[in-house]
Length: 268
Image 1: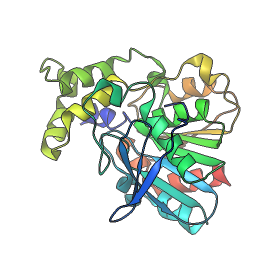
Image 2: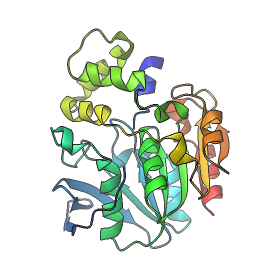
Image 3: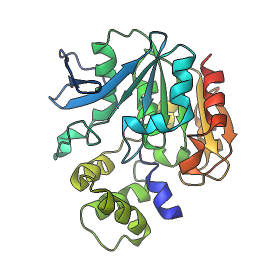
Image 4: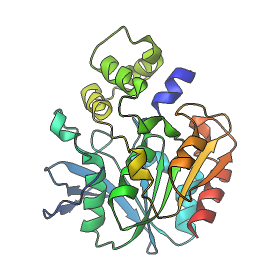
């Protein structure tokens, strides 16, 4: 199970000048991103905007199972959740170009632009923290960032576990360290090819880029979460960042009351 938990942690980066079009969906809305990919999103509340970025194999709806989503609404924020490309109700491109060159962060920045937002907070968990990292080094509108469930390993562009996950999703049966992940994915009937491309083109953020971050950043991790590298090492890479721990492992920490209380206190 520990092997599988890591891969839930897999959770980009120029503003596209092309016009983005929105249309109403059954529950939320869709907007058409820079390359024609349709992204599903929901917006609730009228206050300061907070964009929440889900992790690998996740969707926007996962945030609703935790405490933070409701607490942000109760505290008066405008909360924006989305299904990242390749997941949930969003389009699932089956090409390298569909995920390369920070496509996921471009989606978020494009969505923010389409909503007329001039400044916002970004909150990511697991792989969502990897995408949040791209936002905080690329989008000046991000005024505070939260990275949950993520240590320093993602800063390595040749992260072995990312590569193993990609190979397994492409049919390589020799990557036994990801067997649990593959069992879960097959049972869940996910789009394997879309997930594979997410792993192949998952962005890393360099130490040099992180050293230039000037906004407040909260790094928050579960006391039993050892899946994504050392958070204290990541803290040293981000000037002035704050590191907090809450009870729980990778799957439970992000849904807890303690996690929500810590994040909302930081965002105030």
